[in-house]
Image 1 (tube, rainbow, N blue to C red):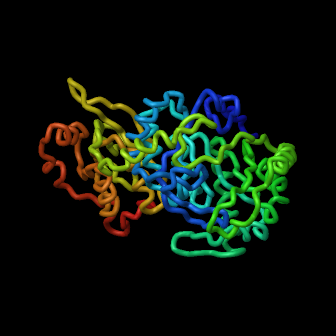
Image 2 (tube, rainbow, N blue to C red):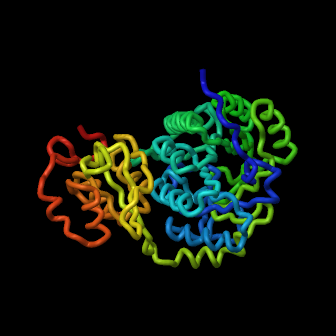
Length: 427
């Protein structure tokens, strides 16, 4: 029997709870410029401050700049309870930037609600990390569950370097969306569906889509009117009227609760719904975007791979958890344990590890391959291969003592012999 899940908490999320929209606000952090699909209704004009629609932002931020901007946003509007990423492209066409930003926000603002909005194409492989970071609300734009209908909505779907068009693209996108939604719900994430209603294309298909999403355990359905955009294939389609949308939402509500207060927000929206301050904050946003891309980070801890908590004796590919140590006045203290990502996933596993160990200045293992070593170095985390007592390694990191005696004995490692350090699991 499936265990009962805790009911989702909408109390401080203004997009998921109409009662919260005048009490709590949200900020969209524009860290995701690239997109992996081309919708026939979308025109992503980044630099237009006079438009309020999805895909528009005044500028792009790095994850570190986004954290600085978040500080300033909360100072200006303390009622902000939600930080989300909604473009201007897709968060998972920019997975590293998205997940780095979410990890930084979670570490600095543990009570902040974290939210993502995606087309779902690249979401699936990152669901576990999304949930582990603590992203509690995810919106997936699903414009239909019949590829014969949705093939008319997308010019192309790009999976890595391969471009799919027409029915092939629509089938791939739908399969990825369904798999991602199923996985999100298995991790207890609150899921909202955005359905862009396009007259003459998919307006007759909304109820069937809502019914299918309800069967998958989706929490909320947002039936949105398409906003015609210049220089797009759908530019001449007339926006559905309020009366049409009300009728459609009433029909969809037979299957799922409806979001009726959506403002079709910009990718850099900030403030209360209906009282957006993106114009007021545009100068601050651009100022943060001009900051150095990688400001110095405070990293107080060291991560250790150990079997028993005394010796450094696990190599990177084998370890299932990391012991996190910090320095105190009278020595070192074990702060916590952190579960390592599962084996597999190639370089993505090593990048996920750097996010897991974002506050560590070094990682101590018996050995590792060249690929993860380079990934850790790029992230500003010193990769240390050694054998011996943990305390001796900590002395080397914190007190600058030599590691040479601890590095004499070579071991079979991740990246040696049959293992190439690819993150696919070592023997």
